[in-house]
Image (cartoon, rainbow, N blue to C red; front, side, top):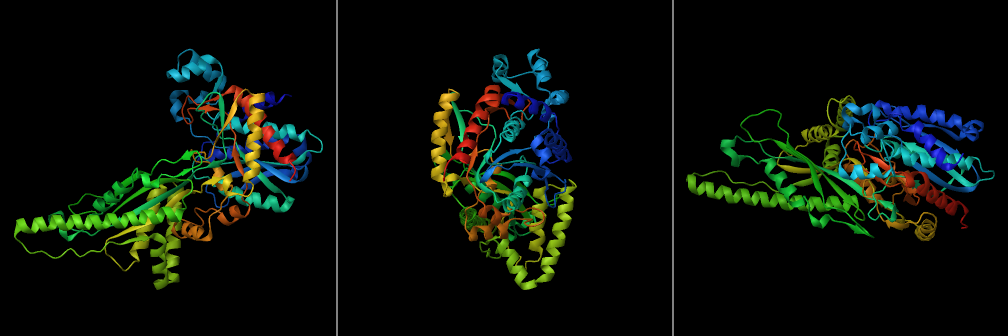
Length: 549
């Protein structure tokens, strides 16, 4: 069977399998992969080379399907895709057609479902395939599946191919974080030498004549702030400190702050954006709120979590100083007009990391405090898993619970990290950088010759991807920063950074041209899906596995 036909066959079987991220339906990937494993003679003859890796402590009991082609030598290329998709609520009453590309196309063509002008143009061209997951990313996954099948039919295959499908990419990347342990186990068992991880996320093409590939992925942290003020009746406002005022000042100094813009190679990150801001009052009364909270998203390329947190701490300290100064100016005006004597405003700016506060309390109260917080975390975890509260609400409750044991009751800004954390990755960070540059140069020549398109190499995939967990090069100090300040670190949220660092490997994302991801007009370019990207992927694999040391 021709490779393009294999891709079409796998796509026909894979797309209709419902695997909505963050739901129990993600386990349906086992149904598909069991069937796929049994369809490949090589895997039926060698059942030890495929299976499902259980994601530890996962409330949805999801698993990672994997298959290994053992060839000559130890060099190994990993083929990665994610098995989850977003839901189909945006299809409205036509949800049943989301996974049926042929029938969905008919509804588009007869005008039953409205299309914007860009989608209509692509529909009329006949060059695009529509449907949930055809682009993000079961289409690309089928390229990898089909290449794996083709390679199993080659006698004395040179090198090894490890295919893995990870759940939860669209949420917290539980699949890829857990895959680090799977990769370590397989590496030790079969003496594999990981030379490249190939992901297949779809790309958005800036120039129709150039296929975009990525040799890295952007980093992301989610700093979360809890500001505790001082209670007071609004009629006696100067006796209190409004945490909304202080948090607002921090937001004003950090939202779109260009000092956080990070550039590396040909990629530039946007500045930070705040995603949540709210006081912590649950009922109305005429007193100031005791606390307020918010969290932000910061993308990074070269800046470490420590650098970003230190920058945020300094800005927060300055904001605290300015708020106190503004309060004093207002207070003096009030005193002059009221001709009354009032107590002095003597608060001092205080900004601390969550990890430092936890450490201070632990040093003073010991095991009793550790046990109390651990038991509280379990309660919060159950509430989150049962959809009783959001993960962010759970984070604030944990911070508030910790502060209850803190003897200092004065106003304070507490900064922590909320899941998820994505390290930035780029091949320039590794010793194989020159080999990857040579590969891309050869790939560009091959692509122009075989597809008529040149290659545009973007240094970082900016849409957030599982490539973040293929390498880690930060020092131990940064690992400690993450470990100490990440809320729920341990049973509920964990990244095996030490393992990832030990087995760090080069990465590339080579996926088909896709548009309107997560929308009902999601689509993938047919030429890319069935011809161009399979050719490029095969070239890359052959180059890595056959290229002499």
